[in-house]
Image (cartoon, rainbow, N blue to C red; front, side, top):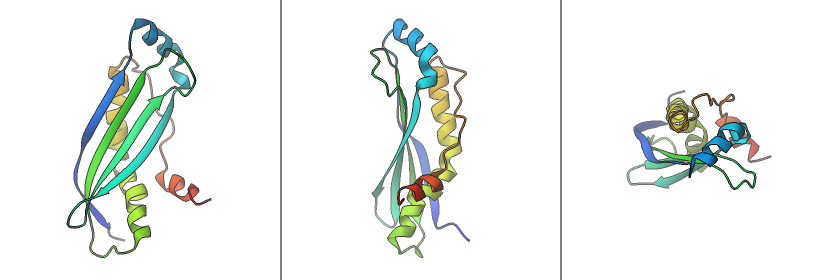
Length: 140
């Protein structure tokens, strides 16, 4: 099967790391294992079968702590959809599965660099995101 899209550009659109003070940093350093990775994918159709796809990663504490750090990155890819792709379901699968799976190594590396450079060099994401599994779970 040939690819149904071509990546024309990929870049970090926005990146944010916030740790308000040293007390928060020390608290987060001991509690960062409670932080959870969240992901959101949005798309914006452009002209000539081009689509801008924004993948947002957030690494945050979901608990109600006053002391927390915030890490977020929006990674953008601009793709050209093959002329053979006519079905909306195929397009959806490209945007939510095929593309994110392809760009994930760059996305993860950039996001981990942000977290590491924010003072947490030992953080790793143990599980890789399975975009196909997430996509299929939406319908169950």
